[in-house]
Length: 616
Image (cartoon, rainbow, N blue to C red; front, side, top):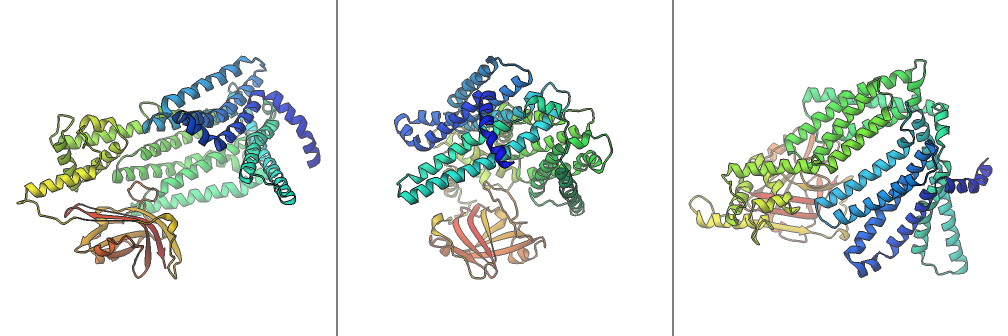
């Protein structure tokens, strides 16, 4: 049977070229593009400079989307029994012009323009990918054809990838054997990489094209699950979904009892769980069509409603994080995703909606478009909120004429940095972020001289020195302190004896998480009982801060039993030695990659540590 299937491949490949001529041609363009970008980028860069970067960016985004668009257009024509060449020319011509316009209009800019460029390209790829499954069946009144096409295409993709992988291994094996047997001097990296490119960009897609089912075949065949799929769903996937739901319910009861959510963790679990639920319900589409009542059919009707409390938990978690840390772009995306989950549940529960998969896809694309490309995009909403908070801070300090001169700019920043209020700290953080992104708001509201806001820390120091100099009756002289340690990552790390666990840390400490006691820096680090760092605010991948305000070792030891709190002490003299690599206490060792500790006034201080925590 396997041999017979292999014998059919030549004729099937020929049929694929005839059925999808434009898409097949684009597979070779993808291969050529990969070879050029890998081997000729440095040459083009030297000759054409910035234009070379634009050209290679266009090469990176154009061919794959063009292949998807050509494939979708061919399938739509097949569904309408049309052989007209004009739809293919219009679709590909439009994408060609649009891709060039996007590259030359947005990619040569910085900051927000690059974000819009990336979002626009992502949106086009999403629409092109979803269009491949839904566009050929757009006029159908049910989703029988969509489901059949989806599952047959998935099988075709798996087979194509496996066959391509075997072929890749065989060809590279032959090349390797030829090198060894005949002492051939190939450029191994170049040869093997190009073989991989060919198998991935030409062989795999063409093999996939050979197995794409016909539109009529998908429409005529009634959706049905195989016995293996039915058994797997009943005895594996449904129990996993049910147990997961019960665990979430138990967690909700815990939340109601303690009224406490540990950072963003529940939201991440809900997102993964909802995706799993959506995939499972989609796969079980034939069960929904069955006339007889069954356990699976009742389960499909119940599970969307059962997931509603989980989505509500996600809403509470997001609201909790925003109240603690303030709004940010990532939280706006989280809110949108949360709303999308409510929409999914509504679509699945409303019986009158017969083409549920289509509407779920449409809502996703519409929401992605709104959040990335319109005036209501997440970056725009976030920017307006941030600007409003800074304007409120300016108004509270009595500033109404803009741009501020340099003296007023210094005073404004100084007052924000010295304030302990949450609003002031957020306003300062947002001002720094806007300044770093060269936002026009900074230019229109603050000093436009050479000093301007190019260095907020310098402006703050100058303002503080001025305050010390000219207001000695009310301000104490303070001996500032600053330590900066930075070890190259390639130096390696010495693992302490007896270490049983290592945790990567990248921490921006809150003011209450550390203090300077004379010549000694004292800081606290809290971990969950499951030994994962507590999530808090910051700008890095692992954002951690201590559970509560801790003023002494005694307070630290009396922390909530949910956390393990470690206390570290180190002298300023030790911190000033750039050779310092570890800070040790009786239970853990903190290996330092980067450390920045600073104190500029009695209240003003900062601490940032990047490294590895070894637990004994």
